Length: 411
Image (cartoon, rainbow, N blue to C red; front, side, top):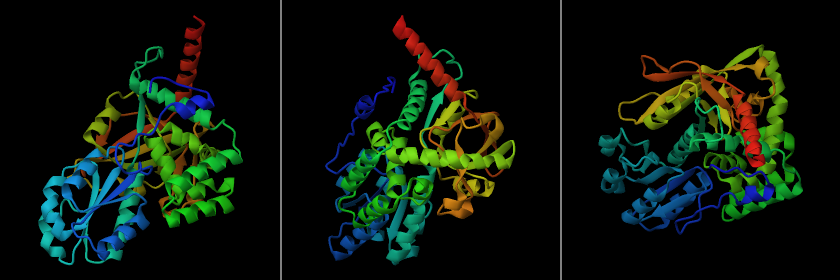
């Protein structure tokens, strides 16, 4: 994104959702694909059970159609569900598809498929046990999904930006614009109408939307975000994929969450001059190389950044490295100079309002900017540690861009 629009009308027109399939576009981060050659009441029941866990479920009984659809999915992670009998015929065709982030098998003969164990997330003879496992795996996927923008250190003059640096600046300007738009009942209604339309065939989500409409108060924004609600899922997908239209639609909640985090940010003064936060994640080699290409580059999160005061929580999310995985286990150790940053970088301890209080979560507002302070180091157990600092330098860069842009227009 190399152009930046500031007016409300332009923001709504910057992008247009694309849907290249016969299915409605998935506005969440996860797609469940259920493949079963049988057509009976059991498969219908299982499809319904899966949709109670994840709104977007695709059911196929033809393997070629199933694979064609999987290969067309670029913006979501896929959980693949099938039976043991079907697994034998399909495994070799799906095992190396990068978008698949979990393979779950229905089978009463759990020992029969030991040769696939390294690639399979779980084999279950009980439907309820599988649903519970899928729910937990989905949380791990959601917590791992991060999108970054980069500002290279050599670009101190911002008239001729690379695409990555332009994207970095665009995102920060867009965020600053969103939180200044009118916060009113019209914005709230627009968000709820869009949510109802998307979930129009999902009874449970429609109930959740009605509950939000009737009972939500602005000071409860953190609670609604941390409990994996419809606003959590739809906003995070929009931010990760830079879906401008969807971000604009959810401006009402984005503004509330910004205000709530800003208010709670003041509590961090009690931690003293500095606080260290931790974030565990898994990166591909390509993502790792991008993050370490330039030690002086700024790394901006295209969304909210969830961290923890407890390094053990970060280790849990980083996972244990395995020889068969193409992902690297990473722990970000983020030093935050509370006194120096002031209110220019917003982050807050949300433990008291979180569904997962044992995680000691600290949530950064949209667009948190980090910088490496040392080369990443790998420990004996093959986990990579990134020492980083939170910085407000993005504000300086954005101001420089605006000044230069105005100067060019005058010239």
